[in-house]
Amino acid sequence: MTVIDPETQAGWVPEADETDDEEEMPLSLRLSIADTLTLGNATCGFMAVYFTTTGILIPHLSGDDSGMARNSAATAVILMLCAAVFDLFDGLVARKLRSSPMGAELDNLSDLISFGLAPAYFVLVYGMVARDAHERVAAVGAIVVLLAVVLRLARFSCITVKNGTFQGMPSPFGALTVVSIVLLELPFEATLLAVVGTAWLMVSRVEYPKPRGVLAMAVLGWIVSAMGLLAAWAFDAPGGQVLLQMGCALQIVMAATIPLFATARRVNTFRDHRRENREARAAQLP
Image (cartoon, rainbow, N blue to C red):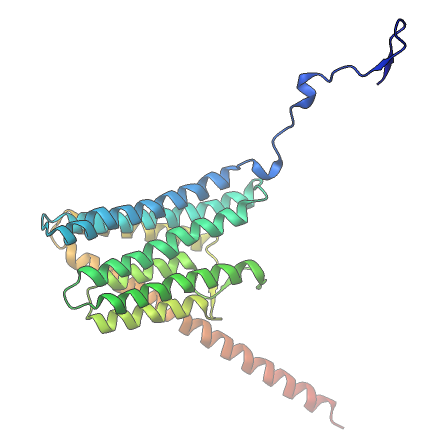
C-alpha cells in the first residue's frame, strides 16, 4: 500500500515485515519418513563399498593376511542386506504415509549405490583377490552388473507394469544373488557366467512378484536369516562355512526357479487365451 506524506507529498511504501520475506521451504525439499529410510539405504551401500575396500582390497594389496577379509566381506554383505531392509520398508511407509515429490528419485539413486555399485565393486574386488580369477575379465563382469542395474532402474521409471509385479529381477534380489554367487566360491568361469546371467535377469521381461503382505514378511525373514548365516561364517562358528554355502545356494536356486515359474505361468496363460479364442470362433460358425 502506498502512503502520501502530508509534508512532502511524496509517496512511500512501508517496508514489508521481515516475517513476510521468509519463504517456507518448498514441499519438494522436505524429507518424509520414507525418504529418511531411503537415505539409510544409500548409507548402507556406501559403507559396504568402504568395508570391501579397507577390509579386503587394501589388506590384499599390502600383503596383510590377518584374517580380516572374512569379517569385512561378511560386514559388507550384511550392509547390503540392511540396505534391502531399508528399501523394503521405505516403500511400505511411502504407501501408508505421505511421501515427498523427490521420493522416487531418491529411491532410484539409493538403489543404484546399494544394489548397483556395491555388488559390482564386490565382483571387481573378487577378481583382484581370488587366486583363480582374472582381474580384467572380472572387471567386465562388474561393469555388466552395474549397467544392468542402471538400465533396470531407468526402465522402472519409464514404464508401467501391471499392479503387484516387477518386470525383471528386482535390483535388491539381484544384488544379493550376485554376492551369493561370489561367496559360494565356484570356479571363476562358472562364477562369471552366473553373475552375467543374473545381470540379464535384471533387464529381462520376466515378471517377479512385489514383496507385499505375507511375501514381504517372508522376504524380511529370509534377510534376517542370511544375516545370521553371515555372522556365523564371519566368527568362524562350527559349521558356519557349510551354513553359508547352503544359504548362498538357496538364494541362487530361488533366483533360477522364480523365472521358470513365471515363464510357465505365462505359457499357460497364452494357451488359455488361444483355447478361448478357438472356442469363440467355433461358436460363431453356422
